[in-house]
Image (spheres, rainbow, N blue to C red):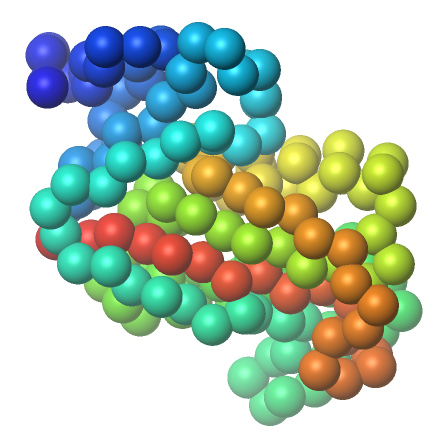
Length: 151
């Protein structure tokens, strides 16, 4: 239910709706911890679903940006993700879910990754963070795939 620009749910807290075409409700239900770098549940109503392939640190010429530097690669990944989202007629506010794959993920990496998510999304989407042994090419250290909902 919508009430004054807010989503109202029978449980949890309510967060203002994302600006954009689709109705995305970002909720952190009672009984689950309240994260600052992602949202526990994102409900999409209306609109179309856009699936965005895993974005890596390759530029438009397929050169790897930030070889050996996972944080620099992450910056390029978010830029590529933004370009892909915009090509679908959406914005980062329309992203409901991301999955991040990081080579040799360490527990402390979740802090800087969370900060980058907060920096790149007006509302942190639902997010799964996965440590992997390798990605499709040995020089790639991070990859993010996304799901957006647009009108």
